Length: 72
Image 1 (cartoon, rainbow, N blue to C red):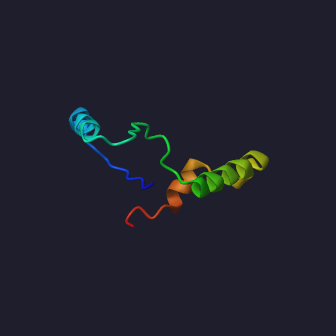
Image 2: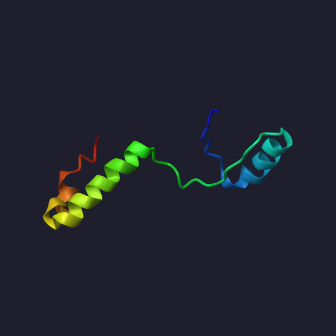
């Protein structure tokens, strides 16, 4: 089975959903909470654990803000 992710403007979503349903697709999922892959979730969880175990691991916002290359 293939999966496609589409970004549809809110004002067009009802029309799009009706169209797709009328075409007879087997499943529609309006849930957009699964935007990260399993590997990405693992990496995020590892970073959260590091921060919980050692709060000094994280930068404060002021320091982080100074290190961001805003022109990139």
